[in-house]
Length: 174
Image (cartoon, rainbow, N blue to C red; front, top):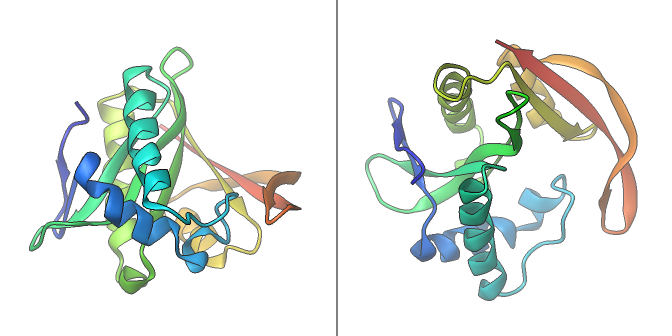
């Protein structure tokens, strides 16, 4: 079971089946997926498959994803976690998204700080990386604010709407 993490305003908890609607609400929104390297969801069934994907990644120690929830009310407003988790090599990549209704309130900064701390202190990670579309100013700025260093550009690294995009690659070392 994914551990519960808490911040001043947020509860980060395991993603469960009843979160499918919240995941659909996020991932069906073009503003959320335009820098995500995937098409917007069109059916609730796709969100249910995300829930299974996140659970299987955790069981197989390939990833760990939390639901982001406001403490004062139930319901997923986004997700955050580690992709490409390699316990053997003590590294992972951080990823996150938030429903636009909750943008620019500092929630991802708050959640990411907690997840990064958990990664270094509890999972024993040495490196946390991130891959971000060049055009995603908010995410590039967030990572810089969190202390990540830009290592370079991966050319033609991710496809969005059938078009290859360059991405920045970042890292934060323990």
